[in-house]
Amino acid sequence: MAPTQETNGCSSKIPDGKMVIFSQAQTVESREGWHQKALKDIESRLADPTFPCVFSRNAYRKKLLRFIFVADTEQQSMQRLAEGLREYVELSQDWDQRLDTAYPLLVVFAPGATDASTVAEYHAFGWQVLQQLHALDPGDWPHGVSRDPESDAWSMCFAGMPLFCNMSNPGHRTRRSRDLGDHFVLVVNPRERFDVFAGDTPSGRKVRANIRDRIARYDGVPHSPQLGSYGAGALEWRQYGLADENVERSDRCPFRFREE
Image 1 (cartoon, rainbow, N blue to C red):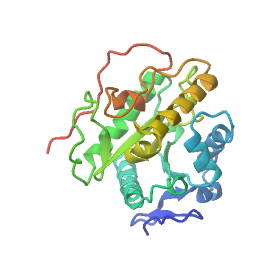
Image 2: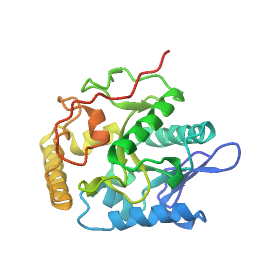
Image 3: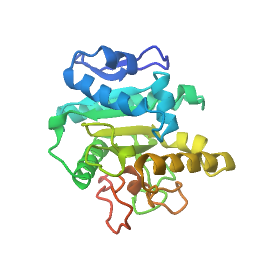
Image 4: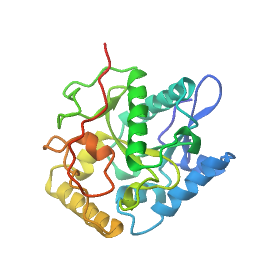
C-alpha cells in the first residue's frame, strides 16, 4: 500500500508484509523499544521552542513527520530503505507547495547499525548509506543536477528527485542543532522545498537569516561557514554533515557516481 498525503497516518509495506514508512502517529504506537527511544529523543528536541529549524518544529507539532527505521546496513535492510525512499519520493511528487503538506522523512538507524562515536565517523557512515542507496536507485539522475559533488549544482538524488539529507548524530558536542539524540538520523527533504520556502528571494533570504540566527543562539556558536544557498557557490554535500567546530574544510566528498 503506497503512502497517502493524509495527516492522520500513512503506511507503506513491502511484499514480506513489514511496514517501511511510519507516520508520526504510527511511530508512537510502535512496540519496538528502540523506535520509542528514538522518538522520545527527537520529540525532546523538536518540542523545544528554541530549536532552530522552524520547519521541523512545525512538522512535529502538526504530526507531519514520516519515519523509516533501519536495523543495520545489510543488503536486505538497504533494499527495504530504498523501497521506502522510493515511495517517499512518490508521496512528494504531487506536493501542492503548502507548508502543511510538507512531510520531512526521518531515517533512523538502530544503535547497533554503526560503531561510530565521533562526528567524522558518523558522517562516514552516512555517506556509506547514501552510496548504497545510490547503487539501488531505480531512477535516472535528473537533468541539470551535476554528478560531481564538488560542483555547487550537485545534490543527492533518488528515483529522479533531488534531496537534501541532514546527517544528525550524537557525536556533536558544540553543534547541538545537528544532534537528535542517541541515534544516527538522516533527515530527508525534497530539494525544491528549500527553494520554495528559503530560496534566493527576499522572503527566502529572510527565512534563512532567521534560522541561522536561531542556530547561533541554540548552539552557542555562530552558524557553520559551510551553510549557503544551492547553486550559489556553497557545496551542498558539506551542508549534509557539518563539522562540530567552525573550521575551514579541505576534504573532498566520498560520494562516487555509479557506473552506468
